Image (cartoon, rainbow, N blue to C red; front, side):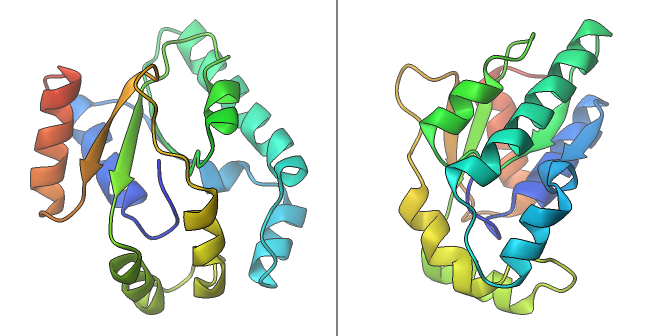
Length: 161
């Protein structure tokens, strides 16, 4: 979890590959109206995000019902959003990726093919609520190589490839 450009996809893909678990990108669950809104430079509000979060929660539940553990990227910026995801019929653990806003802005400037404009980055950092001590997950800085970050995450979560 974390703002756009923090490294969620890179990190999640590596974790999924290491564990042999399916990977999903939460952006794929957005309705077209949300993508159009963000593409035009307008930040999503809680009402826009509600059906998106419900779709993700339901996907997690369906996979868990089939006995499948998954890795999913999702900004999950607010605790209320994470509360919706935790309603899934599975244990949901969060990995909050932490990075300096300037580093993330630099990454967004060089990223191609994504609908999220750099102009919305500040709104994401403004909405970001760090994991609380009673939330199931870890917070990890992305100031190391992706491999080192993933190794640290797996260790902190007690997961072995």
